[in-house]
Image (tube, rainbow, N blue to C red):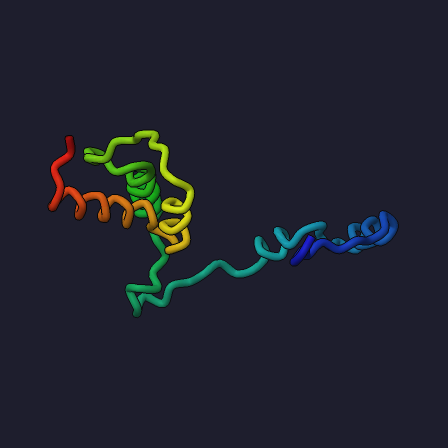
Length: 112
């Protein structure tokens, strides 16, 4: 695994560390550290209240998914491979660009 931060140790070393009062994780160190204390000067550094955090989470949950009221319709269409490859090669947003190309074509042509 690239970038893995796992380490290995023996059971004997783990038991010896636990006997000395060392934690298996850093959670104990975090709990023992002094809590953040806001100095009251900079409002941007003020920790959020529980209500503010819950309101932010609720707003995030409402935003997830597709936008409501979209005028788009999902469809299946068969296209020549070279045309599809050309649009895909143009990078992210190729479907939007394909939609714009079709819209531009409709300005000068009447579908039959």
